[in-house]
Each structure stands twice: as C-alpha cells, then as structure tokens.
Amino acid sequence: MFIGQYNNKMDAKGRISMPIKFREELGAKFIITRGLDSCLFGYSLQEWQKIESKIKSLPVTKKNARAFQRFFFSGATEVEIDKQGRINIPQSLIDHAKLTKECVVNGVSNRIEIWDKEKWDIQLIDSEETFEEIAEELENFDF
Image 1: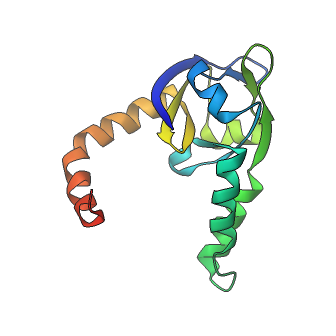
Image 2: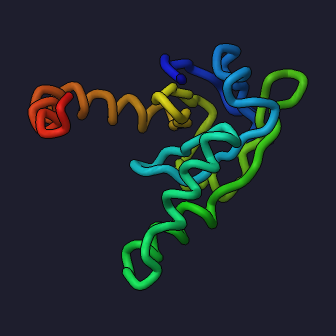
C-alpha cells in the first residue's frame, strides 16, 4: 500500500527520484500513465494488470468508455528505476501533468500520483475546504 507525500525535484532530462518507501512495492519496472486532475498515476506491474483488466472490460459500444480507454492506455508507459532511484518521465506525460522542477509524489493506496507542486498545493487547498462535504457524499459507500 502506498501512503505519504514526498517532495522531489525533476531534472532537466525529466528524471525524478522515487521515494525509497515506494520503490520496493513498485518494483524495478512499473507503469505510469495520464491520471485524472492533471497528474500522473503510477502502478506496479501487478496492480496494472488488475486495472487493465477492469478498463478493457468496459463496453466498446459506449462512447465514454472508448474515450476513457484511449486516454488511459495511450498515455501508459513502462518506466524503470535506475541505480539512483530515478525514473525518466516521457515528455508527453510531463506535458499532461504540466510538471515543472518542483514535484510531489503521493501514495494513494494502490497507486502513486505525481503532481506539479504548485498544482498539488492548489488541489490540497481545494480538498481541505470541501473535505467535510466530500466525506458526507462517501457515506453512501459505507465509509
């Protein structure tokens, strides 16, 4: 399980260090893809297989299902953690998440998220302001 928030810097070549606590669970190779809210999602290969199975089971006869499949899978790439604990993020994913030098890597249960720090700070403030309302909505999910 991935938990916690880690501030990191991305270098000019698009490399960012993965938190030590995440490396073992991610494995030497893992998948990153476009995430929601303008961040990147990262999954271990084992978790990716589960997610892939669920998404590919969406009905291709539904326009929104096809759009989501295209968005999610076309942005996916396998990355490898180098000897310094870094991954190299492709430019298309850097552009999607609008990543700059200052980044945040968050653990979110079964995945990691990579955010531009400024965008994360805004997201966090917005979430804090509406946290109680969000919690009330989750009541229907037996939370």
